[in-house]
Structure formats: C-alpha cells, structure tokens
Amino acid sequence: MAKTETKARLTEKDIVVHLINWETIGNQVTRKINNGKAYEIRPNLAMVLEPRLALLDNECVGWAPETKEDRTIELDVYGKSEPMPDGKGMQFDACPSYSIKVTLGELEDYLTGETKDLQTFMDNRYDYNGRIIGNRHNFMRYFNGES
Image (tube, rainbow, N blue to C red; front, side, top):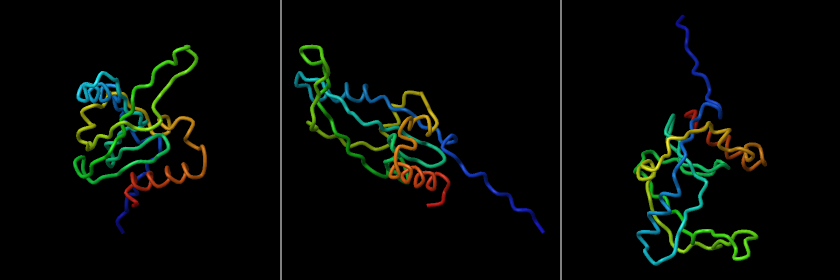
C-alpha cells in the first residue's frame, strides 16, 4: 500500500504579509487632485501574495480575488491629518473627500519590501475578540485551500 503524504497546515506565522506604502499613494493622489490640500489614504491594509492572493487589514478583514486584476477595490481618500493649532492633538477629516479604485496588481507596485508574518502584522488585534478570531480562522482556511 502506498503511503500518502499529508501537507502541513499553514499557521499565522507561515503567512507572509507585504506592507504597502500608503504615503506614496496619498502623495500621488494629492498631486492628481491638485487643489492645494494634502490627502492621505488611511487603511491598515497589506497584501499576501502566497499561498493565495489577499488584501487584508490587521483584523483579517479583506478581499481574496482570484487574480491581481480580478477585482477593483475602492479606497477612501481623506484630507491629511495635521496637528491642532494649539499643538495638543491632531485634527483629521472624519469623512472621505474622494475615493479611488485600484486593483491588487496596481497596489503591488507600492509594496515597501518590508514583510511581517500574519500574527505580527495583526499585533494586539490577533486575539482581540471573537469576531477577529473568526475572521482569522476564515482567512487561514482560505490560505490552506480549505475554502
């Protein structure tokens, strides 16, 4: 009888998360809008390229398209946060001023080269509550080819 090999199940430490340079994207949006105001994009999103493609945040909320060009993602653009006039805190726009549509292929051009494993990327959100634990569980099933 032939012995069947079992593939080791990936863990959060095995998933490589690629960080995205959101500052550069915000600067490009500012130049394109060209109205004298600075803009930023605030997502805490990063990209996973292998074993399966995904864009996710530190609460494991995200997208899992089939290809890098498969799905357009809409990102909100806000007026850039700046210090309060009295220097005691920051002021920021609560609502977005614009939105932009991008694909994962377009975002891939802005990867910083810095990577973290999924658990480190999630930081203190890793076991924060049941919803996030469920999100993480679902993404791990996806990464392991179980969904």
